[in-house]
Length: 319
Image (cartoon, rainbow, N blue to C red):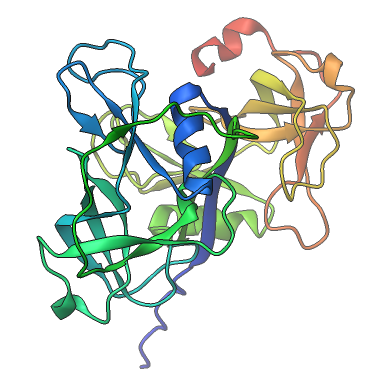
């Protein structure tokens, strides 16, 4: 006899990205505009503490803070951690240290990167200075990084009016997480069934709810779910939203409808796009079926089956 081959381990790169535009108040506007001009600003609290980066409200009293001060571009490392594998879009593409730096004149520390040849060259208490980016636009990346410094310390924080020409009033915050995902047994079986144009869930042996997609265990009962159950293919729209903003890299014209769909036999609803019907005619209770594209590994969208709408009592527990 020959041993059976182990099942293929599925892996796929995933990116969770949510860039959003943020408007800036007077304090953050002055701070980022100052970085563009090569000036580091902080704020002074009611008890005289200088905070860099600046905040708009006193963390102790919750009072609004508006007293801006300029601090030095040199400072002291208060703590650090070595990063030997820089990731995409981090400040440096060679190994570096993450450091908390208390700039001269400040009472709090700023997190940034320190360019150093190795961890042996970094220590708490070492002196560093700002290395400014060659091109500055009014963002924290205008500080390219910190670098070791053996010159004199800067002075005390001095008042600053925060006035600059062409102030920065808004930024785009790039929230992003990229990683490699590997599904477990339950989701691997689910993905394999989808490639055959079947939707398979798993039933809890205790409460008998059918989970689609399966999770390998019932989150309510805490027991393994190994009883496979084929559901659908048709289902019922339980609730939905109309999308009016076009997503990056998604070739779908707006507006379109994204819905929760309870497939027949499933114990909870999954997500899916509704097509084949004007967006303003989608409704709760609409009966739909999957539409597959040639070579697709999952339904492209769901369309109306033409059946009468489901009665509310039939799906109210799945909303």
